[in-house]
Image (cartoon, rainbow, N blue to C red; front, side, top):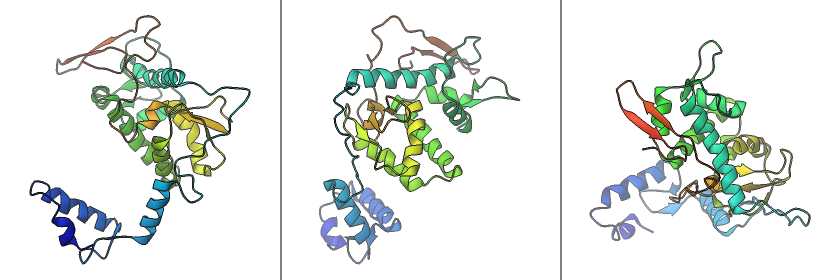
Amino acid sequence: MTPSTLAAWVTAEGQKLYESSLDTLSRLHILHNYPAKLALNSTFKTSLRHAITGGGTTGSFGVPAEKDEKRAPLDIDGLDSYALERWETILHFMVSSGTGQNPQRPSPGVLYLLQRSGLMGSHHGSVPQITSAGFQFLLHPSHAQLWNLLLQYLHMAEERQMDLVEVLSFLFMLSTMELGREYSTEHLSQTQRAMLEDLRDYGLLWQRRPNSRRFSPTRLATTLTSSSPTLPTNAGTSSGSQQGFIVLETNYRVYAYTGSSSLR
């Protein structure tokens, strides 16, 4: 297709975005022979077709695990409760740091990520405390919070000499999986299997045992690339009242943290 043919479909309001998009695709070498014509790079085109149709042997959308006749998979309500508990453990630890309370500590991997990303800090081995950047982090929607941590995870993965293509591939694979279904770990790469423990700690997936050959993505994972809520607002809130926090910044701004992923 020629650029002029496609340009005829573009409105005046969308012209700038259209040109910017084509320029980005060209710089990424996704478009071939641009601007003479609009044609996808052959390798990208083949991989995209496999991803859309589920073709090839790569398991683009994950490989469903065979049904376990002895144990039923964790249902959607259970997955939501698990994800919420893991995620709010992280948020509660951040917001209650330095208050004299003794909240449940996230895993060492999560604590390292929080400090590596500048959301928490410690001096000379002291207990980590929330930073100014951490307070701002708490004000973001949970979807933005999650991607903030995952972007930091990508930087950390590079430092650990993990294959970034495999890391990104697994994250996007999780976003295409079906909530409430179990998937096999057999076809995962070594890098992706190493990610399972980290993603369990963040609440993105559930496994019955750390060495289990199957896993279930949670709603945090399946909504990574969508605008849907990462977790239902009522998940896990039916059993007792939730403790909240009042945050007073040095600029005299006051925020109320309700403990249910919402800040006002």
